[in-house]
Amino acid sequence: MQRIILAMAGALVVLVFAAAVFLGMGGIGGESDRPAGSAALQIDGSSIGGPFTLVDHTGETRTSADLIDKPTLIYFGYTFCPDVCPVDTQVMTEVVDELAKLEIDAQPVFITVDPARDDVETMAAWAEIHHPKLVAMTGSNAQVEAAKAAYKVFAQRVEVDGEADYLMSHTSFLYFADTTGLRAAYRTRDREGNQVEPATFAADIDWVLTN
Picture 1 (cartoon, one colour):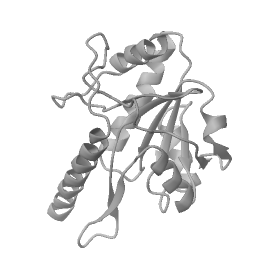
Picture 2: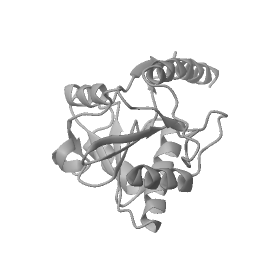
Picture 3: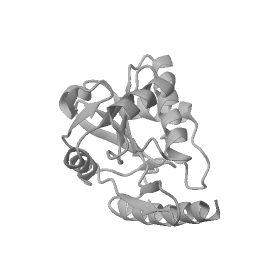
Picture 4: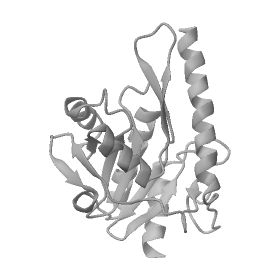
């Protein structure tokens, strides 16, 4: 157990480093009138987002063009994640429910960074657990790498001494896109480390759509 905790701590260090690299591309957004200004990333000029082709949890091959045909929330993670990914996926789907209250029909999308373990069957179970609208995406290594590259996602396998399973250290941001491209990106926690409420994210997305 101690080895697992140490490995998770090491993965967190890599994750923080990767986040610093990402943030160095554009810095933190912080417009005073933005509901989630303290969690928003400045994406202007960062070239984040782009086309991808993946396989959804039903086994259907889908492109980003046909998937992102409405306001869409995207999160990169993996189903074997012991802590962060399940929480962030729940936050994403709760944001979708909050947007529905604002009469915004949004689509939640989960993209694995661990296609070796996250096959179609595993992704189907993940989608069923989390939300009826969730689209869980996997694919070949090349397909997943292309999607990661498009969204500037860092992911690295972390071995755990004496354990058969491994962890994945990865950037974890919530992306908001629509048919015009990437509109916003968020940390799920603010600069003080506090979890941002789903309703706050929803209000910020509404702000993005109207500004």
